Length: 323
Image (cartoon, rainbow, N blue to C red; front, top):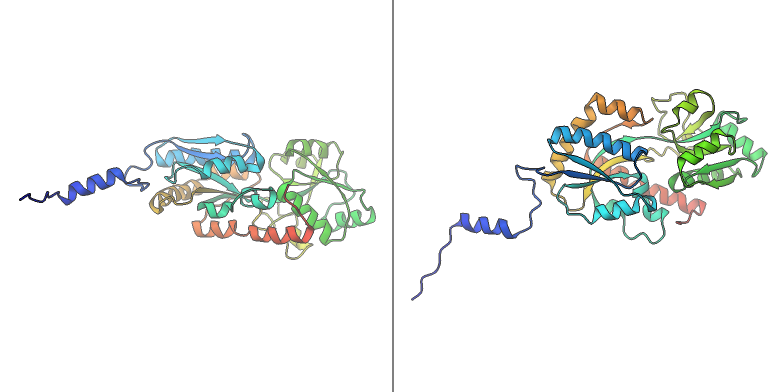
């Protein structure tokens, strides 16, 4: 009669752990470099915020944190490469309002980006501003709208597409004003033509144009936000002219992981991010980008990402179609 083979529980546990995939943090996370994917080119606001964050995380996690730029298709190329990575905490992504709204902006984009990620924390927020050429015959949003109404189609406005284009269309439609839209491929060219007085108004971020504001070549007419930015308290919000257009959810930057990343891994990264966000070095660099440094709980960040629903309502109102 054969005797049953007896194996100790410790040995069983060892073999189970060796054959089952595990993304648990254990005591060694991170034990290799972490990559932060950015869906835009180097040098832009998202890239700079990612690099400042990577530097801070590297110091606190005692591990290399690499920024990988994968631009194209309004950040869709970078996002799609990121979202297919292992949910182990070693590949992260800088989520922005643009990425969250990809199905709204881009034809044939499959899935909902917000549903494909684990929120970790916000990093920064900034506004979309209405910026006019320095010698424009208006200084405030009501004056700009009045000028556009008095000169139908004469005033020109420009964006690089996406959310700023939707916002601009909404502003003019809601105010019953008609202006001529000129699309641009990049903010640099838009800024150049605005400074050169080839166009009248641009809807875009203030990042990188502080010098032109200081010398009077450009001026800020209004900006998004629930309240005026502490960085520019004299600039009125769009909502002061158009009630309901607070749009605090525009132009946010935050760190996310692929769906299914273990909670213990997310907790380690979140704790390190909170420390990064509290450092004066991080705050100073983010403010230098005309942005507000801000960290958050994962829950609050997810709620902010889900406000993309507001943009869908606006798109229906103005007949905005994905391109």
